[in-house]
Image (cartoon, rainbow, N blue to C red; front, side, top):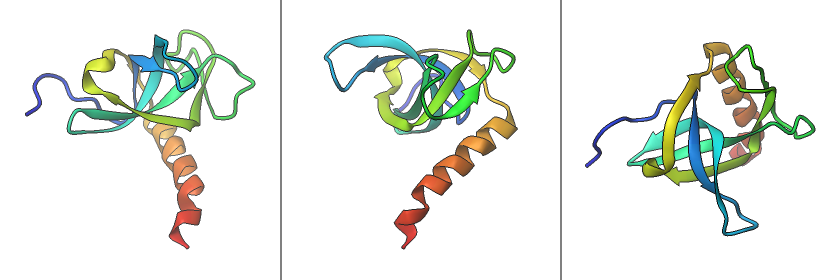
Length: 109
């Protein structure tokens, strides 16, 4: 049974994230894609503008110009989310959905 806040698609959260190449855990911003049974599926966010992904601007709420990395998706525990930073616009959420849909189109055949 779930108690407390649920996280919604398009929320940019600060979360404890374990990286795949190390055992180190760091607080990092992530975009919530969906939550199910206290598992939160997120896309990573980076300030490395050379990375491939969807731009995220200061005007939209980011601390600094960033990129939503749709090639870096992972599942975290509900308890790993520390706080909601801001919420993406409907247009940005649609852009994320379209990019993810295009990436998965090959699975249909």
